[in-house]
Length: 341
Image (cartoon, rainbow, N blue to C red; front, side, top):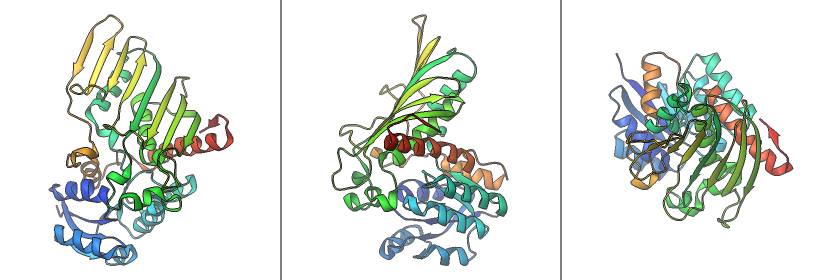
């Protein structure tokens, strides 16, 4: 079969650390083009990968040289570029959060349906081995009824990782729309929905800017979430954890507690009510700190869905449900009320 011809739109850190290397190592992919409004960056990355450089995504889509794109731009451009790509007959892998409103997320989903092309949102936490194991343990009834949970995602902030440092779009509200809550919190709402196998229906949140005075977006958020079955728990998202990254999740069940990505050696620790403890070594979760050259499985899953003509594992509908929780958190913070999702 012919290889899937791919273009990457947006040549910042996520493209350089994840999308481009993962496409490069995929046997079913031919990297064809990159696009960035920063011409020097587009050219530099294009040269590195031996592909064509564009500064206009419209021009890239009009070239008809690609079958699929990754959209790795600032958040406010996710929806318009994804819709344009889908409408031009190209499959789309879009970074998270998929959009900045429910309306624009729905427009992406509609474009995928009407074009018959694949749309996948890059929620990589679903592909982490410990998270998949936890989902199985919950689904099988191994830990009994889930009573509560807490999850956190925090690090020192994008200025240490983004190609533009403190000047990055991450800190500009008109481009990012939302800070730590959109960057990290949306990963965790998606993860909780995936692991628990149910929807989050109510949110109470504090979304604050306490650490990054050079930006105008949130950098610390704490939310209380309630699921449809009535389980309550917390989610923290922060750009103010100055030591090592925290990406842990704890699920408190009737028969056991699951500790995910908390122990330095065991990615999953199961503490049973009987006193028994089972440690799983399932490989480490991805971290930007390691230079990020590990495989997130996102590109692999996206390409498999195209090659085998199957559903993408994180559809636009899934992306919208995870985004809706974040939007409810923002509303809760504004209104100082518990918000229904």
